[in-house]
Figure 1 (cartoon, one colour):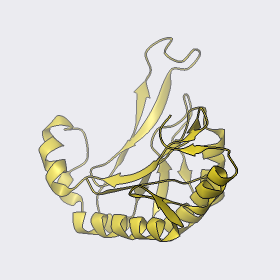
Figure 2: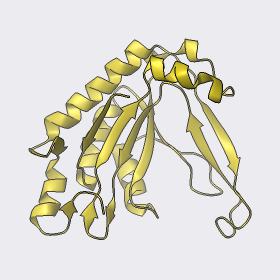
Figure 3: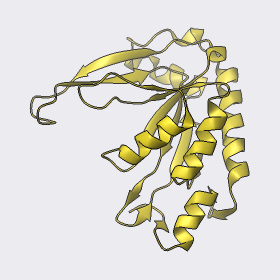
Figure 4: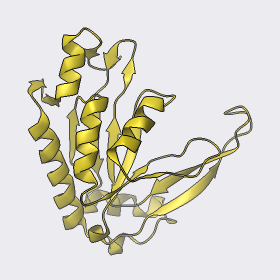
Length: 186
């Protein structure tokens, strides 16, 4: 599963998502309880969702029509009482969707952000486990990989230094320099 781990702050999210939206659509991975799944049209919408998230971080899925595959948005019924007063949420699923998870701040520590996607080989190995997903054969995994690499190269190019193998983007570095966070998992 090709991926990139990096450190990003809210200001960095705007530049990353602005780049992604030039070629792709961006969705939240899971909706808020009792609300439909959102597709984001602007980087500012993603930043606002990140800043308003009740959990540390924001999970997104990226899709381009050039990937050719189909995805589903399905309703999930929540266990009664799991989230008081809430009964359902929606999730997006598809074999070739590119994941982008922005790490949040917890206990003064900025968690790494990550991009990732299935390879065709991995998707085929799991295909029987998820028979309700739209056909695997419709996905162009070369295109999925091309777009994913392009996004990862862009993110890496924004880095101003590295923390181990992870690029540190300008907003994350400013937060660290100002003592607002340390970099790493909490």
